[in-house]
Image (cartoon, rainbow, N blue to C red):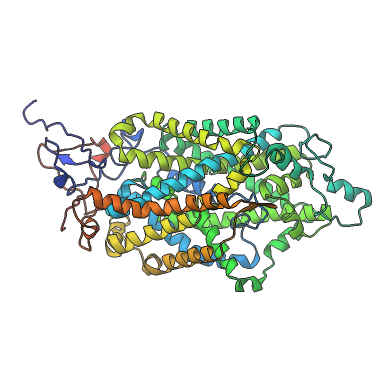
Length: 634
């Protein structure tokens, strides 16, 4: 070794942390006292692709990071509207629903969105490694990954359905436009044709089935081949291939991490707005559109006295912004250290709300036209099928001139929105696990991403069977329900109560130059967790078994769903137990009161002593910035 040359750094295997060590591996006692965060412009040890380029990740600084956040949120606003119930998120805000919608946005949506962005950006760590702030709550990060993994499995199946309809739209006549196909039954009735013949009597939609509904249930799903969730039937190979294509697209887009998906999201997050604008203009110019818009805007204030409306409003905000899924933490961790996430928070959250309202105009204007064509009220049209996306709206497309063109645009918009969400889900999983095992996984991140996609594809094959929809409904009802609420409440309390609201405010001041105001602190400390706790208690008290149409799930399926939801909740106490067993100390010593060891910041990065280097070599852009030094008793 040349004189004056720093000794070669050694990688510390203790939980994947990077330490500044002059030579020999530090002992566990020393290791627990120092956790260095490589600084601002890139993730810890350099993001995939960023280290080689010696620059921040392309496409994730403003406006790129804003596009990524907007894209991942735009795909997540709606839980799949696949059932007859008016599930939260199954339609845009409507009438008096706007009052609780915006109130819940202010109490829960905006504050929790900002909290996760700040946590991810300051730490530059994923959902698992970020819990160096308090190892006792690392189970909350594991619960996030479990929830995201379950959602990603069935979410890509929905993308497969969209691909199926997208390919079906590449015809001169839409296949769900007429009866008379082999999958149609005697109940199939072309409602528009019935009105053209007599034009006087309104149709009783309960006694007939539309061609679009039979196309969805009997051809796409082939649900008649299954007796229930216990007898899935045969694999539908057309759906199997669509699911494979969906996973191939996702893998190719995340192949190089956020460097590749960050570029793709420029298109997938912005192009849907163009299609939405086209659908909106076309919708409002249709005859009868005013009926749907009037139904959409007419307030029914007596519904404000119902607690169900407020719960649904909170759930709509909860799912639309993606709080608790880990995607916000992941994408924010790639930001530059001084990225103005305060501004981004309001742009994305309010932009999401405005987009939902505009989508409501686009949808209900077409439903109003459909109502006039069928001669039935708008509310009866909206409830005529098992899903707005795959039954009602496709049926409305058949009534428009150039129906294949408008159908293709609609499903292409759904495809881009769905892919945005799937990018966020997969990048969250890959980033979190890679942060935990950087030495082994970061050089082979593409291979690791491929293995995850293959594993999830195989697990999702059950969804391509005749009875796959039953399994999808079960996953949708329980994978991200009460477990997600518990995770968000735990995260909020751990950051504000254990890590400390004052300490967290100082960290934000270090990034943005100002501390969060009274509004954010009041929501973090009291309003947001209290509201979510009330929502959680209400959802438990008002629990209703899952169902799909007239099918009621058996007891064993309900139990399986409940266990699936409880598993994410149990991750939190399990993580606490592991933290106590791995650390030499009691529960109180693992998560001590203030002042305590923490890993989210202690000011500007001090110069390293001569002969000391980072265990993970920083890039050129990482030689200046902020480093976190955690010391016991600091």
